[in-house]
Image: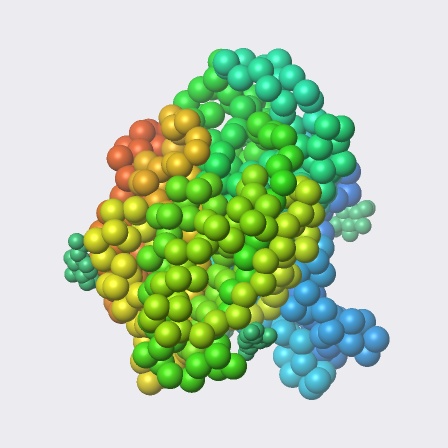
Length: 588
Ligand SMILES: Cc1cc2nc3c(=O)[nH]c(=O)nc-3n(C[C@H](O)[C@H](O)[C@H](O)COP(=O)(O)OP(=O)(O)OC[C@H]3O[C@@H](n4cnc5c(N)ncnc54)[C@H](O)[C@@H]3O)c2cc1C
Ligand SMILES: *[C@@H]1O[C@H](CO)[C@@H](O)[C@H](O)[C@H]1NC(C)=O
Ligand SMILES: *[C@@H]1O[C@H](CO)[C@@H](O)[C@H](O)[C@H]1NC(C)=O
Ligand SMILES: *[C@@H]1O[C@H](CO)[C@@H](O)[C@H](O)[C@H]1NC(C)=O
Ligand SMILES: *[C@@H]1O[C@H](CO)[C@@H](O)[C@H](O)[C@H]1NC(C)=O
């Protein structure tokens, strides 16, 4: 009480940023130091918890509170004044910095280091300086739901920025936050399958309850080990978390064309709310929260500790792999004829229940795979034949491989390639509807060309493409997923690879040129909160369509104070990161 009165008095002093207190302690930037904003509390502010208060928190989370240190501090002589250099550990970090499993295992590592301010990267110069950049100050390595609840309550009580970190995959850095208290959910590894779901709602088929820390690859492996074998709608990438950002943002993947988005499969969520209370959200209990958690975006309505989703019987599966690159043609005209012919098949592929993952670079199209559930080699070749015929007719050379497998899981582990970590990446993206592709495939391909080579400063970009139609095989589910996804047949991510120095220029180019080109070429489509341009104009409508007003009401009910925050998510209109280092503040 005395301290906060003193702080209020300080506001009346004609000093800007730093005050020298009677005991020579320097008090920097009280909450109200930024005109027009009310900010979260940061280290150095009068409101920041004392060491004793942090110790109390640590006791309430059974000693699982850690002060954050950057992974590569072992490559530098010192970090925050303490000696850190260790030649062997540095070699391990350097060798593994781009390995996703290694990255995920660290409590706070961000797979895209731009959002840490590129701070304290591995180096061969130990005299360089290592600082925490935009990493959080503390992290709770939560092992029990009560640890999550204690973290939420603490952050709420002291007005500290809270960030949830599962795998650190977020392309837009949404699991990283300067000066925050992070809650790491990666240890919630419980998985339990049931043959008959007995919870509320009409569904009585097989299901699985998945803890917050489970990754897609772990889940499909466990599903495959059941008897009878089952599958789950997950992402194509094995290391993406299942229960965190992925399913809450919607979640597309190889089985989405036949079953719908991952969020559509959800039957029940266990959640820690913004007040730190445990609730269940399903068809009977807290049905508004249940609706919103299925596609309404990450870190918005609560922290999910477990989700129950439908499982499906295993299916025989086939894949075609196609390459068109410099070993086939160096003529850009021939190359782009090939890309155009391929993408024009999007509607045909999804009509056959298929999913396609491809990487497009200047002069190289790598399609791996065109995936056909319930297909063998002969069947998939017959379905892909119109593409082969079109490529032949247009004189486009290519190479092709076909494979089949008894199950989806065996295809998944054989065909999907590991992805990296540790690269500065600036993303954008858009899903395109069947109508967009019928009417304007050529304009979409022109937008891809723009994305691959947008300017002299950024001559190389990439497109990571997915042909996926989550509205084709599945009954339409009333949840928060953008309704436009039901009409989609293609979704692409664009990426530029800036350095910290030309990051701002890249953002502008991404939004003003690349996002604009894709938005115009596919006006019926929308954008995907998990794989997007943070500068996406009209993001509320682009991410959620007509679901937005209902989502906003649900956010206001479940988190009226703004305990959770992730950029361009529901209800964050008044919040922004202000200044350097970026502090989270609300416009008043
Ligand atoms: C290599 C790669 C491949 C990908 N492939 C696919 C794909 O096939 N399909 C697809 O749909 N997406 C894909 N994505 C995107 C993916 O869905 C998002 O990056 C997603 O946000 C990752 O969630 P996470 O929990 O694993 O990651 P994190 O970065 O840890 O968290 C992401 C966001 O979710 C929040 N969050 C995490 N856990 C919780 C929780 N328990 N409760 C509430 N909020 C939480 C975080 O605060 C953050 O805002 C891919 C991403 C990458 C990097
Ligand atoms: C929390 O307690 C554990 C166990 O006593 C200790 O190892 C850890 O360093 C403490 N964390 C902080 C931030 O002091
Ligand atoms: C972030 O990077 C910029 C530019 O290198 C630097 O000026 C700034 O101090 C860094 N901020 C933090 C918190 O590391
Ligand atoms: C080009 O395609 C061939 C298959 O025909 C593949 O082996 C090769 O790795 C590809 N090259 C590049 C640079 O992608
Ligand atoms: C096709 O794309 C062009 C160029 O982006 C755009 O101007 C036009 O409106 C689009 N047409 C349709 C029917 O979507």
